[in-house]
Image 1: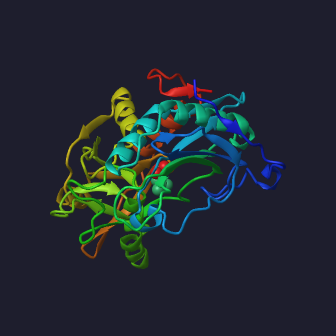
Image 2 (image 1 turned 90 degrees about the horizontal axis):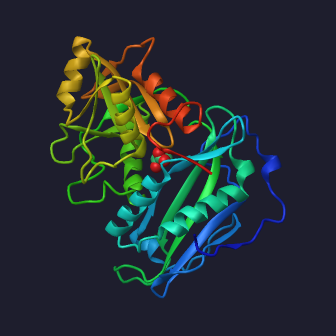
Length: 351
Ligand code: COI
C-alpha cells in the first residue's frame, strides 16, 4: 500500500454551486487535488489538499522547455452508487512511458493508484451519476525545477485533478484532412502524451476552424498520404462493413479507448483491420459510396462520429446510418465502463 498520504481537507465544499445536470467538459473542478514532489532524487509523501493554484519559480523548466506530460481517465458511478475506473493501470503505464521519453522520473504505482483511489474516496460525491457524464481525471507531471539551462530539471511535480464532466463534443464533427502540418514525426514524441503535442495542434486546428471545420485529421508527416489521428483522438474508418484503424507507431498514441474498441469489435463480430489507411483509399471510398463511417476515439470524447471531411478543396459527406458501428461500440464500451454489462475482460476496477 502507498505510502502515506498526507490529507488536508477543504473547509467548505463548493459542490452545492455545481449544476450536475448541465456539466461542461473539464472546467468545473472537484474540491481536492493530489500533489507529490520529486526532489533530491526521490518522490516525497503525496499530499491531498484543497484544489488551489500551484506556485512556481518563473525559471521552472516547464515554462521554458515544456517538460510536461499528462493522462486522461474517467471515474464512473452506477445506479447503486458503486464507483469504478476503466483500465487504470493502462494509464499508469503510459504515463511512465511518456515520462521516460521526456526525461521525467517514473512515478511509483503505489503513489499513482493509491493516491488516485484516496482522492476519489474523498471527492466521491463529485462523481456524476447521470448518463453521459463522468468524473474526468487528469493526472500530470511536469518540471518544477528551475534554471534556464536546456537540460532536464532536478525537481518535478505529479498532480491529479478531477473535473465532473459532460460530453466533450456537442455533436458530430466535420474534419479537414491535413496536407501541410504534422502532429508527429518518426523518432519524435507523438506516441507520448506530452503537453506540447497538443499545443502544436492548436494553430493548424484554428486554420481548419476558420475554413468551417471542427478538427484536423492528421496525416503522416513525410508524405501526408496516410491517415493517422483525428484531432486529439485515434481514428476509425468504416469501409463497407470493415472497420480500419492505423497501427500505433512513434507517431500515434496507443489509446486505451482505441485498443478497447479493437478488442470489442472482434467480440461483436465486426470485421476490424489494424493497418495503414491512405487518404486516396478514403476519398475513393467516399466517391463510390463504400465509405460508411469515420469516428474519433479517446477517453474524453469516447467515440465521436464524423459527419464529413474536406480534402483538397472538396467536401465529402458521410451517410446517416440507422445502426452505425459508432453507436453500437459507444454503447458497448460505456455500458461496460458504467457497470451495466458483464466485463469479460477484467477492465473495470471497482473502488
Ligand atoms: C483524452 O481523451 O482524455 C485526451 O487526452 C484528449 C484531451 C486533449 C482532452
